[in-house]
Length: 129
Image 1 (cartoon, rainbow, N blue to C red):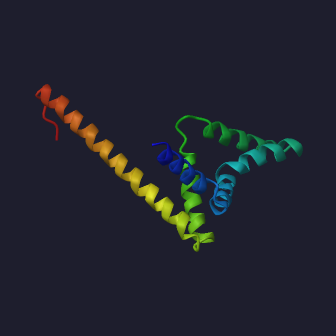
Image 2 (tube, rainbow, N blue to C red):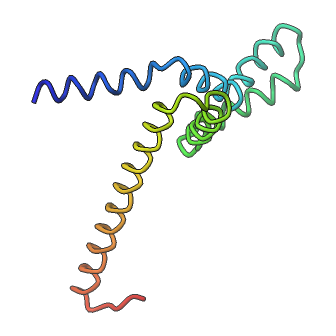
């Protein structure tokens, strides 16, 4: 049990600390978020109000709980990995394996929710199309 957990932790560590993935994630983060932080700094230093205002407004949206910026960052990261490092087959394969695994988990959860909902409606004698 302990060996299996340590192997899983080591596998995740190798995946996350891969230099190619870190470079692509850094570039993707700058595309989605970093420009706003840089804009605040540059706007404050050179007194460019419009740049500072746009950056602060974008960051306010980013910090809201309903922002899907992380998903966009991950999509850009994967696209950059495929474009910049096509020879890194191991990382791309791991991304594909994780994607398939979580896609199956989401589908199973949806089926389970649908089944529970139908059971509840059946108890109430409500038919739903």
